[in-house]
Length: 418
Image (cartoon, rainbow, N blue to C red; front, side, top):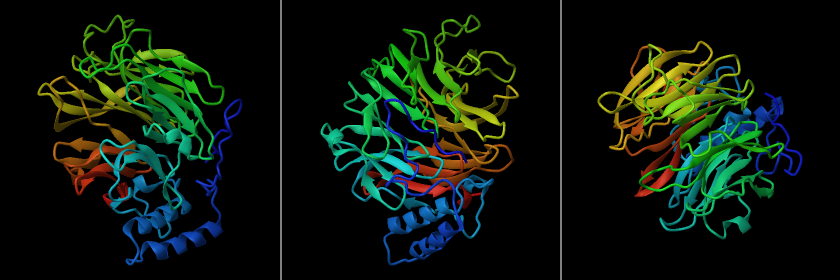
C-alpha cells in the first residue's frame, strides 16, 4: 500500500501516524503481538460490547487490513477475524451518516437530542470521541463526514440552508474548503488527494434547482465545476485514483438523450478529458427511467465497475452493475423496494471484495448482502429498520438502526455472511 499523498501549499500535511491514527500502513511482527493482546480484550465478556469491538477492530487493522482477500473475500485467519454485528456509537446518542475508509475506521455524526447540535465522531484506534476542534462546534451543525485512509475528515458544517464543506486532518488543523454556501454530500479519494461536493440552492419540492458538483484538488486547492452552469446534478461519485467521476444528471449537450426529464449516468474521465453516458440498457439504448446514485469500484488490478440504481416498469428499484473496461452491463438486479411517487431512489449500491463480487443492497424488508456474480440468495444482515448502509472495499459494513427509539450506528463484516 502506498502512503497517503502529503498535502502541501497552504494545507497542513497529512499525518499518517497522528495521535488519532497511530498505526502505520506498513505492519511489522511486533504489531501482531499487540493484535493478540487485543484478542484477549475482545473475548472478555465482562467488558462493554463496544470496548470488545474496538479491540477486535484494532486487531483486524493490525492483522493486515489490505490482504489479497480482505474481509470481503471471507479471509478469516487467526489474526484477521470478522467483526460481528456490534453497535459502535454510544447508547443515547442519536447517530447518523456513517462513513468508512479502507482501514475500517468509522466516522459518523450525532446529537443527544433531535433538535440538538450535531458533531462528528470517529471510531479508530480504541476511542469514540468528538474529533473536530471545539471552536467549530459553536454552531452545533457538523455532519455528513467522509474519512480517508489517513483519518482526515471532509464534512458539512453549518445549517442546511447555508452549509459549507470543511477539511480536518486529525491534528487540530481545519479549514473551509469552499467559499460557497449550501454545499452537501462531501466525498474524497482514499488518499485524500481529491474531493467532490454539491453546492447550490435546494428546496423540498424541486429538490435540486441550480445545483453544481465541484471537484477540488486538495494538494493545490484548485476547484472546478463538473457540470455546465444551470444544469441540475443529483449525485456523484469519485474513483479511488480520482480520475473518474460518475454523475447523475440531465446533460443538455448529449444530442442522443431524448428523455430530458430523466436522469442519466455520465462518466467524466479527468485524465483523458472525456465525458460519456453509460446508463444504457442491455441493447445499448437509452433508458426511459431515471438512473441515480452512482458508485465506483476499482480493485487496483484493472477491474473498474460502476453500480447505479434505475427503475423497473413496476417502479421497483433496480441495481445495475456495469463494467467500465469492457463497456457492458454485467448484471441487473430488481429489488422489491419501490421508488417514491416522485421517482426518488434510496438504494446506495456499494460493491466490495477482490472482484467487486459483493453487493450491499436495501430490500423492502431489510439490508442484504449478496454475491451478485454467482447464483444464490442474498444474505439478510438486519431487518427493515436498518438505513444508511455503507460498505468499504474490503467488506466492512456500517449502517443505522433504531435502539430504544434512537438511531445508532452498527458495524459488521461481510465475512460473517460469506
